[in-house]
Length: 193
Ligand SMILES: [Zn+2]
Image (cartoon, rainbow, N blue to C red; front, side):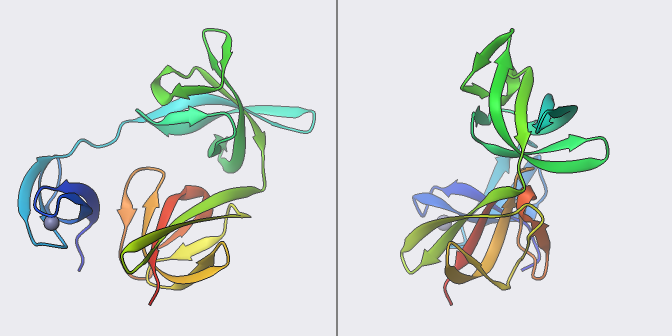
């Protein structure tokens, strides 16, 4: 299957399922991979916001940017990727600024500055399907660790085959042998073979 896959609510299955994209957005035609139901949907490209970020390490700090998706809720303690010059760094959010006030939690579009500290590691999250149940897994890994679709990997001490990878940018990669680095990944989906 070469078409991209997105998660949508299927009115026939009555739950969120994988849909194959038969015709590209915005006026997309999609097909449920579970029951075969075909429907038209208007898919909006997620809007990316570039927010100012201060990245500190030790006594030093640099100003860069972090890309956020409109509508995402950002919380102190979240791990994100900051761009400083041409380089990307994994950072932890230490404070969120809006109108000179510091906040614990804010939707992306309201954030003026993200205060962060450099971290070597990122948290990788995975959902492992095993029969009818889904097991949530997470693990601290190096930000540049590579994950590959259709290959065997392990997260949180469990081995599984990667079926698809959801990226922070919002898209999902499903093609065999496609790769992504840990810092780019929102969630890995896998199944126990
Ligand atoms: Zn369905």
